Image (cartoon, rainbow, N blue to C red):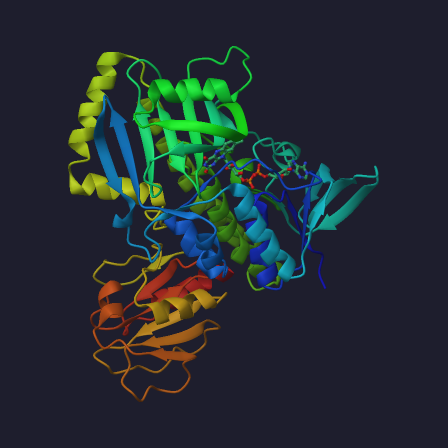
Length: 510
Ligand SMILES: Cc1cc2nc3c(=O)[nH]c(=O)nc-3n(C[C@H](O)[C@H](O)[C@H](O)COP(=O)(O)OP(=O)(O)OC[C@H]3O[C@@H](n4cnc5c(N)ncnc54)[C@H](O)[C@@H]3O)c2cc1C
């Protein structure tokens, strides 16, 4: 068996990556310098696109069961609701966010990883790294002082904002390191807030207060502060800020976690440095506004893992990994811009600018397309890789584009697609007449919309009496869609044009 891939860091991103590799039978080691998982709740929102990913990992039901569904965000100012965005506008089988502490998300991922026979190696710290075209030599320090030098083909740096892997490959975050400061609390409180909404209270004289109801009477509170003057976060300080800014009564009973932090907005220039892949906070850091940090990171891992599995097993050349950077770097850059804009607009100090912001927000969010765009941005359902070097667009009506996430078309087909770890070639029959399966592909072949007698050679056949799939995929006259293991469309083509599918196969091997 070949050397295991090393994943450094057992935060949500490293765990997702290790789990995705283990599910594909790739040998993997995951190490973390901490003796125990963190007890800090940190990222608490799991957005719709991440829930779609968790469905593929078989973990979405557990996640939903352990969290609270959030279906709206409300912005308040001067006693009025200046804007309300319904998150259930998004086109997803999970049209909501799940509010759940990062500790719980990590627990669920760790349990699944254990079930695949991989345990996190704790108190193991990456301290050294060299690489050449053949492999990586990593130095791992153990709790007893033992230094282990280990050779591996690929190392994934999922070791967070202060990433050692990043430093050791000579990379650095580039961006803005003097940012806004926030007082944060994870508390139990008496309140009468809608548990399915998150709130922003714009205070005329101070910065905004963000409130996220969690399970039971637990709340996440994040308040922008002008300066902390080195002050320690306390429950009394947080209560005072809440009393000044919240336009709803909130009485903190006890605090589980209190902290003060400053936001940075930065990203590495390259997500792939030779045989080292940077993911999650190791590759990008930004404001928690919009709650995108962890979501972007775990989607990095999901994008990377299937490619790494193909490369590790020799089914694709190493150049396939360049598409990880090509697809995920622009997503990271957009998230940094989005979170930065939200933070700047939210923390305006000038009263005239604040009034203009509130009026503008009210006006803009009265427009349905703006509400839709904000919901899509927040839930990350707008993420697509249309400009990716490894997607191929064939002739079609353009409704569904190569690089888009495949939309759901009925629960049975969705479940079948989510259950496959590999590529799926979806053939949509034309008016009930099914073509023969495509020869020469290793993808699982599913047929949709066939008459009762379907040609042999398909792995599964689904009826589509109302033409739902054909309509959703923009293939009224039938066609084929190559779906990647991460649920995105690799290639799309009408039935009489197989070139895009062959071209995609060739690109994987290029
Ligand atoms: C105070 C705070 C509040 C936040 N709030 C939000 C929020 O509301 N919403 C949101 O989306 N995001 C939030 N985030 C960000 C979110 O927590 C991160 O985006 C997410 O944790 C990134 O996951 P990760 O796995 O990339 O990194 P991390 O979770 O940081 O995990 C990195 C892991 O690597 C390990 N490690 C580090 N160095 C080494 C080494 N040399 N060797 C071995 N192991 C190592 C660490 O021990 C750690 O377990 C917050 C972060 C902080 C700090």
